[in-house]
Image (tube, rainbow, N blue to C red; front, top):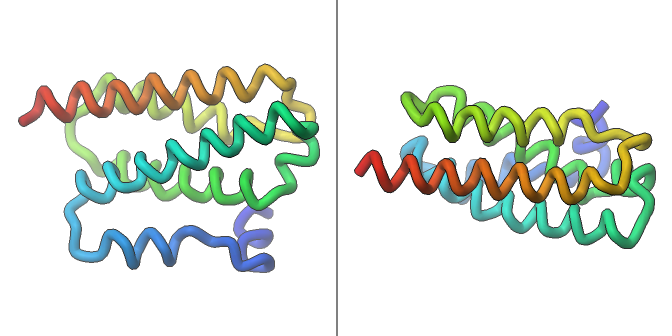
Length: 130
């Protein structure tokens, strides 16, 4: 359903991701994607305070967030090490995947917090691996 909606409305972030990260290693691609995800999460949580979740999950903001999570999930799954980040990431990704028209408003706060945790763990482990 999500991929069908993306192809119908032309809002796929995958071509943008591929073009912007061509020739970069996995770590650089994941770092670039996390910067974009920060923006997507901020937009999604902002809209969640202004509109019903049932409408938000039908919007381009939700579609782009879900697709970016799918892309990042593929990137992180092949990343060696980073156990704390991986756990935080899996928690965040699970929250995104469970969002539906019946999700409570509090989902926005939980989503934002889970993303911040995963992002912090990624940066902490990245700086520790250098």
